[in-house]
Image (cartoon, rainbow, N blue to C red; front, side):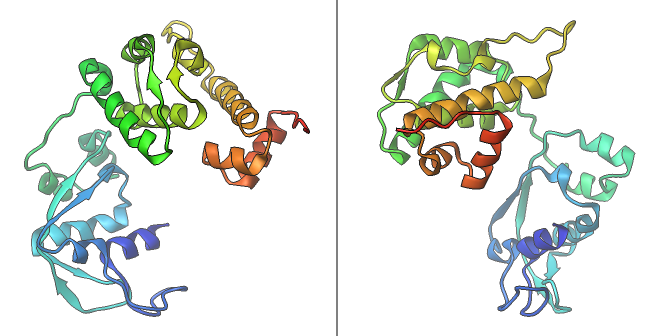
Length: 246
C-alpha cells in the first residue's frame, strides 16, 4: 500500500496510522550522509514522486503524520527495467523527476546479452546458497551450457532463484535431468506458448519433488518451496496432487 511505502521511505510519527505505536525514522533519514538505492523507480506511485523530488531538490523530508521539516543529504541511485520516457509521455511518471534522476544514466544489458557472466554468477550463488542451506551442491558442465542458452527474461534475479531452488531441492551433483522442463522449451515467436500452463506444469513438478524429498510431510515441503502451509495446501488441491501416507 502507498501509505506503507511512504512510511518506510520517509518515516512516521507515533499515532500517524493504525499500528504506529512509536515514531520511526524512514530510509532517507537513515541514509543521511550516504547513499540510498531505489529499485524499480518506474513503479513509484505518482503521489509519492513529488516527495522524492523534494528530497533531491530541497534536501528535506517530512515524516508521515508530521509537519516538521527534516534536512537530509542523500545520494540517490535508482534502477528500472521500464522506459521512463514512455511513462512520462503516458503521464505515469513526473517529467521533472525524470530529468533529476537522469543525470548519469547507465545501461546494463540483459543477462542474455552477457552470457559470459553466467558461470561467474552461478559460482557466486552456489557458494552463497550452499553455505546458507549447509549443502555441497555443484553443477555438471552440461547444466552450465543449458544456462548459457536459456534467455533469462528475469535477468540475474531469475538465475539466482533458479540456483537457490536447485540447491534446496537437490543434493550432490546437479545434472541436466534435474532441471525443470521449462529450460528445454524453446521460444517460437510464430507459435506463442501458453505461459500459465508452462508455469503450472513446472510448479506442480517442483511441489511433487519437494513432497517426495520430505516424505510427504507438508510443513517441511512448504519450507523447502518457500510457501506457507496454507499456500501449499491450496496448490495441492489445485493440481490434484495425491498425498502418500507412510
